Amino acid sequence: MTRRIALNLGLVALIAAFLGADTLTQLAFKLAADVVGDAPIGLAFLKIAAGSGTVWTAAALYFLTYILWMLVLQRTPLSRAFPLTALSYVTVPAAAWLVFGETIGLTPLAGIALILAGVCLIGHGSSDTATAHAVPTDAPRRPVPCAD
Image 1 (cartoon, rainbow, N blue to C red):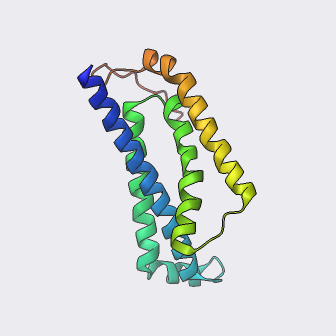
Image 2: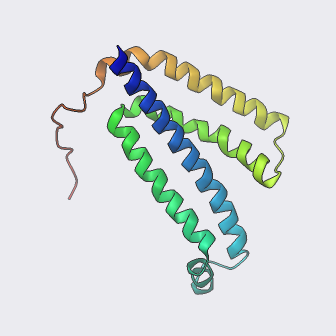
């Protein structure tokens, strides 16, 4: 039982890290968009982007988000992990409000509440089946067919 609690806490920490990195990525994308301004997509845009530390930071955070997501998927079924990505629809507006002073109206707040309710319902409903179908980390993995 203690090992299972430790595994669950580790997964929760990993998912929290993913959500934090994803939120920071979106904030960095916004800052990067401000850096490149209205430059049309083309060589001028690429020159501005390539010379911007903000753009490179956004790209690095995006890569970190990818790594964290791979780690999450190694530890839990996709059907259980994917609904948690909807929490970014909560964390990103909240962070944009805190960092950029963006406003969140009543309708978006209602949507955020519905997203939270939906994630709770999906998480509660899938806990029994996800646990029953989870692949132990020491189990051999079947190769995934690829289209070459």
